[in-house]
Image (cartoon, rainbow, N blue to C red; front, side):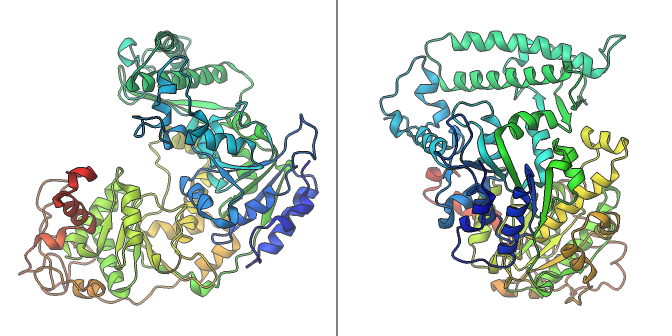
Length: 635
């Protein structure tokens, strides 16, 4: 079976860089010692996908094992962007990539705009496709299933558990594996809502907390409701399956019912199993007739079926598996069967500096005072980096909106780009493609983003990324005293964020920390901090920055803030009211302010449209006004 001695020779690049050669030797030795699972803690920019390919090369080949034994290897990752990168990398061209059906279009005449999961083969009973061999989905699936190496997202990998097509393999490599427990919890969560339950109008949704019987709790009442919902869903699904032909909407309804029946069945099976390690929590804040979510805690059993039964040996790669023991507990592994390999960080410390520019607390009760200060800080940083792209990690859409509005009030929106939930990927690509030094206000882009070279030279972390304590799973863990987990998950996200802008030993990028809570986090999570990141924290300094000067902030794009030094007031899109007489001020910044110092409320400044419209808004307007906007779909 697995032959660890092949690992170094299977490295796909013509030469090693950094610590790759030593890392592969350590990984080889860890597998040779009999470990079933090897955790590879490799800093950002270590070339983890190349390490992954070398590890996959240790898998048994067809002909080296008995017909009943597993051969070949899987590569999987939670991040779609990582699969895109694998597919585009010439060094990884022997990995066959497979995606879900919805990513492929049917090739039948008249169906070219139809995704394969809504094609005639999905709509018509007994449909015999004459050109199935040319179907892009089934073609890719056949290639991936027969290829020595197959690559897919973790979502697709988990969904194919039990499949006759994608059966057990000798080696499974999971890249960006640090969030495996959280991803499993997300995939295993069951949402009971009008949008996710096609038979919503046929069932009465109880208030599971208030309607529990004398010997029940909310979870017991939920299980009784789930049984009834599952029965109704099965009858509705059987009715659709029995029809000779369905339209696209009916196909979507049938498929969702099948998914729902499977989800509900999994919950009931696990709930009834006294040996299951999974704990379930139920969220239903709206009470009777409202949406509920059934969420698992520590879904080790779910991972056993969907992941651990799918391979003989596993390599899990990440920069931020901070605690081996805690990680193993969260994903259902025995630490005695797991080895940890640390890969040395070879990027010069001077190229990846952290800067303390903290402006106050970003907890909810202090956010109104701190956000204006962070906006002022960003204007100063724009002046410090007039010709370089910047990334703002806003943490939430609320914070992103507030910061963007403040930057508009300063008159620097001409250099700012932002996104919402719907245009996230499009705005990211537009920012990366721009030749101007745009500043991108982002949400949840701390991971799986490769901003090498001039794609980004500086970034701001606006808030310590703690998990939401209103989430029942988080609240349950904290009630159980799992504060180390709480701090560790936040630190993990910060380390991931810091790695976005420095991607190679000769690359460089600055990370500015704006929330006081980040400094507290570093102290609380010190025991779980990798040495190479602790070096960054210990070397952190407070920089000398230019004054708030919107003119200087826009110098790199040949633009000026409207109204001279000040940009005037902007009407808030959140509240619908005036930005207020103290917009741009906090209690720490009111004294000594004079007109003309760049403060957005300086007398004499008048807001023009250009001063408050971001790059994103201008691009959208240009597309809308274009004569082909109806073709583009923006009209």
